Amino acid sequence: MRTEQTNLTGKVCLVTGANSGIGKSTAHALGKLGATVVMVCRDRKRAEAVRDGIAAATGNQHVELMICDLSSQADIRRFAAEFTDTHERLDVLINNAGVVLRQRSLTADGIESTFAVNHLGYFLLTNLLLDLLKKSAPARVVNVSSAAHAYGKIDFDNLQGEKKYGGFSAYANSKLANVLFTNELARRLDGTGVTTNCLHPGGVATGLFRNLPKPIEALIKLVTISADKGAETSVYLASSPEVQGVTGKYFAKKRETRTSVESYNEEAALRLWQVSAELSGLNGPGLSEARLQENR
Image (tube, rainbow, N blue to C red):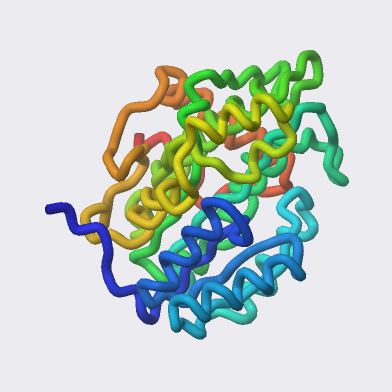
């Protein structure tokens, strides 16, 4: 029988997009395992009710709420600084928040919104919290991707849909970016005690699809699973001793599986990292490119 859970008392787990859907179910499950859960949400009023509900249902009073707009680089930086000032450790970071947008739009930073939230949000927040993760090692980074990554393409000449944009294409591209980011981050964190893996949660009926046409949204709900079921792989990667030390992998239904051919393109992963660092004003997690090449 597969061991799926462990006691997380004393562990600090941060979950983005934790006020609804998979994020809410993930936060609830981790709270039930005894973790100190930090819910990162954009809407305080909605999230406070969710936090109180999780605390009451699990009997865990160590469920915290912190506010962050993950479409804003300034707010991500503010949040990361606040978190590191108020927390001595971070054992698990779950990058879960995401959007699906039918129409192309730009964030306050002038970046296409899907790319900004679904990829750069993961990239910037993780990098800003890396020192704390390393200090807390063994620690884990869990990136929620999607099977939709198989339909994605990283076109550096159209990275933000400048020339051509489609809602699903932008989403699929961002999910491929999640896998490439996970793989590159795993290479850079080799030997630090911090692991990183990504996952497909399954077809989950969540608010992620609320911007799609109503007939399509209704059809999706007919063939999708519950948010609790969709959160199982995130919780597994965050808590199971079976994956201690496992890194740079992709999971579905709590099992490691292969991803698309393009997701293994190390050159694309490295270039995406460099472009992302430029767009977010970062220089990476402290490993020189020379050492990176040696590790490969």
